[in-house]
Length: 357
Ligand SMILES: [Zn+2]
Image (cartoon, rainbow, N blue to C red):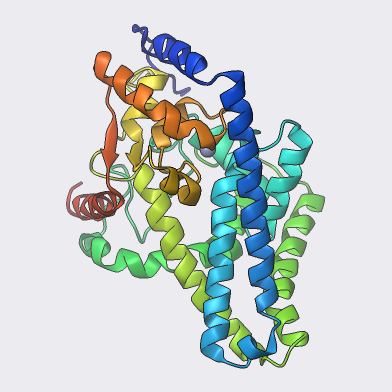
């Protein structure tokens, strides 16, 4: 059945959009676009510089320093993805689509995750039906962690809020070496049907994974004194570290006790219109803080991102107060917590889903 949103009967989005267009003058848009490029440059430079640390003898002769360098390098990659690659996917980093495509391709694939597969899931699934089970590719139906009411409840899920942090530590390794291949083999993912990939694309995916291992493990040990076993060990610790950072800063923007998980009625109609849906399923944390915007690349202003994905994330701090005002005026939902409270809420959500059918 084709899932649809309820027809909108309010002026909420028209009013909000008008206000946002007034607020984002051509000068502000130009300034924000420049800031986007500065952020891209700063994080890319950091990413390259931290990678070069892995080849310095003083660092790689000491396992602790080597591990710290790997972790910082991994973190800079995540920040680069948050602050530049995600915007590139939405064509807001550069004016020309091809530059956005190249930037996203490089940033994602250099970190082992396939850029093309993620773009498909993010644009054609997640942004259309966030938090709609069966339609949002981000709500994984897996037997270890129950993320939706419609997933089968197993006896051990009552402990999932306790063991989730250990599984979350494996998130990026699982994504790179398992999840991408699962997606390659599936014909249907959430709302996306009849998926197929050419042999050439499958070869490209495998080659990029091999290249990632060469760059991250083989090169540092080949061009320096470090033993390959130490490189592998530091690489694994880096993944545990960045996985926790990645999961806990992203998952809280949708999977909490505050956000909703709408289901369609027997005619396939969701209970609210598209824009109310985006507000009800998103959670903001420190959305007007410039510091948080620099770190989380606007993922922390998630309502703004889902309502205005074609604006660069550098304007989200400006437009979020308008979203809050309009949501209040039209009695629309709007969720906001501090990052600590949001993380606590995510674990409460896991506890709740582990207990009830
Ligand atoms: Zn997005």
